[in-house]
Amino acid sequence: MAIGAQNAFMLRQGLMRRHVLPLIVLFGCSDAVLVSAGVAGFGAMMRLVPELPAVFSAVGAAFLVIYGGMRFRAALRGDGALALETDGRGLKATLMAGLAFTWLNPHVYLDTLALMGAVSTHFTGIWPKAAFAAGATTASFAFFALLGYGARLVAPYLQSRRAWRVLDFLIAVIMWSIAASLVTTEFAWAALH
Image (cartoon, rainbow, N blue to C red; front, side, top):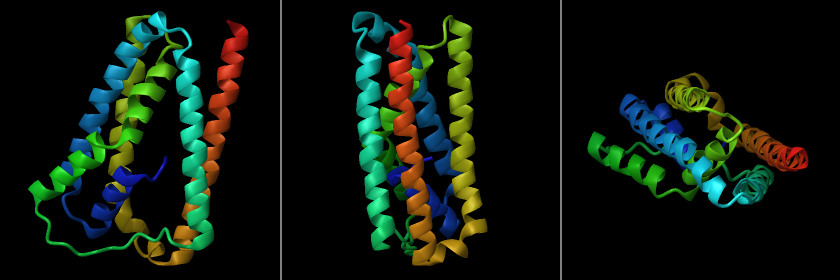
């Protein structure tokens, strides 16, 4: 649910109503590849380094705390408003920017390879893991579609600084809640094993 660089780009394109469907396909397919790699490879990595889930949980929680702090600061300062520039960027340039927002973004790897891979270790057997990956991929496509096509419904409300302050505050609270959940879940998982 974090509105990071990739999601803000999708939201901006949705608000401008430019190249929304190609970006949904690009971002969703990219997530499918990364989630599948995380689910397929994380268990093997965990067998080699059993401490890996705890490390990734700690790193993920730290990232979420920091990102939540950034959004909270943006909410206090009121500088998170999404500027809508009307650019004449064509489809190719838009897709190239989308590729950069995806594959050059370290947060994408944390979310897909590490976080989804770590969560998938709670499932045993190939079919439960495949179902988890399919569900995560479906959720990714749905999220990008919601951002892209839902943007026009909320466009009138996202024009004010106040609206973005509220959104940034809510994002901060959500990020901190997820971080707390990661830490408590990891402690509970370690206590059981």
